[in-house]
Image (cartoon, rainbow, N blue to C red; front, side, top):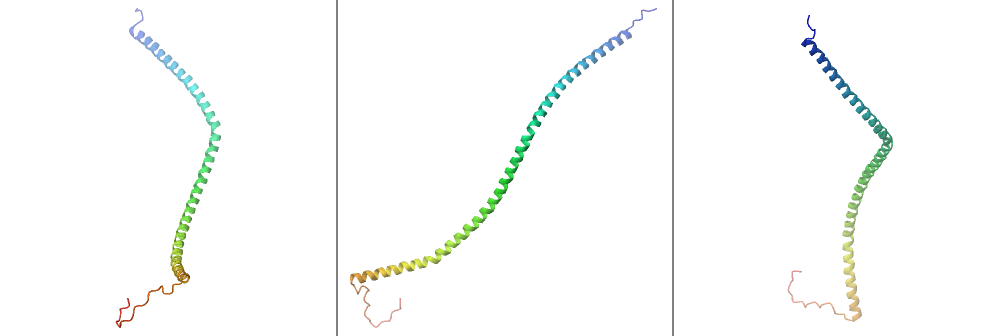
Length: 147
């Protein structure tokens, strides 16, 4: 009889021990990952609770900002209409001023000429000069062209 220990048995025992050690290493790595994920889960729960606490005021603030933006948008639209209306009014006033100037200018010129004539007449009257106008030239019998 032989001792019963052959190379194949030793290989199988050592392979089993190696596989057992590899399994134990994988178990230790997985339990370390489980602890890490548990801490990460706790941290994420805390962050989620903080976000939940902030979400109410943030939603309220965003609604308020949306209301302000809507009001500003409608105000800008109204101002655009008002500016367009004012531009139309300004154009009308400019045309009216031009028409008034064109209508009044000849009258002002006529009033100025009339005042100049009245002033000259008053000067002649007050100074006593009657013959201030040039005397007509004597008729020499020729026909002028009427210039």
